[in-house]
Image: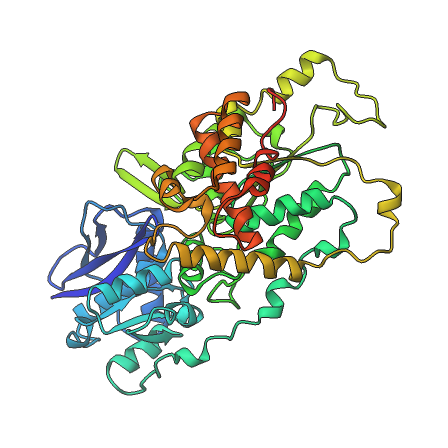
Amino acid sequence: MLAKVISCGVVGLDGIPVTVEVDFSPNAGTPQFNIVGLPGSAVKESRERVHSAIKNSGMRFPLKRYTVNLAPANIPKDGPAYDLPIAVGALAATDQAPLDVLETAMFIGELSLDGEVRHVKGVISCTYAARQQGLQTIFVPEADAAEAALIPDIEVIPVRTLGQLLEHLYGLQVIPAFRREDIPAVDEAALLRGLVDFAEIRGQEHVKRALEVAAAGSHNVLMSGPPGSGKTLMARALPGILPAMTLDEALEVTRIYSVADLLPSDSPLLRARPYRAPHHTISQAGLVGGGRLPRPGEVTLANQGVLFLDEFGEFGRSALEVMRQPMEDRRVTISRANGTLTFPANFMLVAAMNPCPCGYYGDPSHQCTCSPGQIRRYQQTISGPLLDRIDIHVDVPRVDYDKLTSRAQAETSSSIRARVEAARERQRRRFAGSPHLRANADMGPGDIRRFCRLTPEAEGLIKVTLRQMQLSARAYHRVLKLGQTIADLAGSDVIDVPHLAEAIQYRPRRATL
C-alpha cells in the first residue's frame, strides 16, 4: 500500500515542499526499510527512530519491506525533520492512519524513541512554504508552534507525541490549533536592558557623534585608537541608539535565526536588532557562510543589525576580502556544485583596530615600540578597496583624566535614539516609492542622483574635495550619502556646506589607513 505525506526541507533560507512517499509491501520476503531521494545521514537514521517511536507509542510496525521516497529526488535532504512525516506515512501505509486528512496538511518534526515530537529548525520557512502551496494546516512540534504561528492564514497544530497526533487524525482527541494571541508580547524595555548607555561613556564626543551619524544612515564605521580608549565599549552601546525593527525586518531576522537554529526558545519573534562580534580567528566560511550544505555566516546573522569586528587588523586578509561583495550588494552568494544560494547581508559594519601591533603609534603619552616595517605591514593587512567601502573613519584618542573623572551627565542613548529615529523617518518618506531602499547607505549611484540635492555652495565644495583628495567614484558617492544622512539629522531637505564638510572629515587622513 502507498501513502503520501507532505513535508518540507530548507534550502538556504527557503522552505522547499517535499513529498514523503511510503510504500509498504506486506508480501515481501526480507524485512527492509529503504530511504531514497538524496537523504543525508540524519535522514537515513530516521528509520531507527521511526521504528522505535511507533512501537513505543502502542502501534504496530510490521517487519516487512518499506520503501520511502523523498521527492523531488534531486534536492539533498538533511536533518531529522522528516521523522514525523515518515512515521505518519508508515502508519497510513499499514492502515493505522487515515489517508484523506494527509492531502491538505504538512508535517514536520523530529521523533524521540518514545514517540515525543521534538524541536526542529527552520519552522518559519516551512510554514511559509506550506501557505504558498495552498495547504490549510501544518503539524509542528509543540515547542515550535509559536514560531510557526508568525505566518498568518494557516492553521498551526502543536504536536506533543506521535500517539496524540494519531488520535487527532482519527478525531478521537482533537488538538486545539495554536492561537496567535498566545504569542508572547514584545517587552520594548527588555530590548534595551543590558545594553551599554552612551551616558556611561566619558569623553569621546566626536566618536559618539560619528556613531550617531552611522546609526542614522546605516553606514559602516572604522574606529582606530590605542588600547583602552573605549572603542569596544562604544560599539557595544551602538545597538541602543538604533531604531526599532519593522515587522518585516523582524520576520526576516527571525527566519535567518530559525534556519541557523539560534532562535531563543522563549522568543519566537526577534525584535532586537542583531549584534554579532566574532573573534578574529573566525574562518572565511564562518564569516560569510558556506559548508557542504551552505548555512548562514556572521554577515547574514548580523542582517538588519551590527557586525562588530574587534581587532580588525588581526583578521585574516582572505576572510576580510570576501566581505567586499556583501558590503556592496547587501547580500552574499555562495556557489556549490549542486547549486547557488543567496543569503541577505544588510548589516552595519563597525570595526575597531589599533594603529600598530603594540597599539601606541601616534599616542603622545605612550612610546610606540614597533618598527616602521611592522607598522606598514600591520596597516596594509586591510586593503584599500575594503577601506574604501567604509563610510566613516574616526580616530579614538586616549581619554583625558579630567573627562574620565568628570561627574557631568553625558547625553543618554534614548535622546540620541530619538534623533536617529527622526532621521530614519525622513528617509522612509523619501524612499516610499523605492522598496529596495531602507536607509541612505542602501542608495546606488542612480538613487544618489535622484535623491541627493546639494546647494550651489556644497557643489563647489565637493568639486574641490574630489580634486584635492583624489576621491574614487565610490568614495565620492559615499561622501554624498553620508552628507545626506547628516542633513537628515539636521532636519534639512538639501545637503549644505556644513553637512558636506562633516562628511568629508570622516574620510581617512592617512594613505595607509
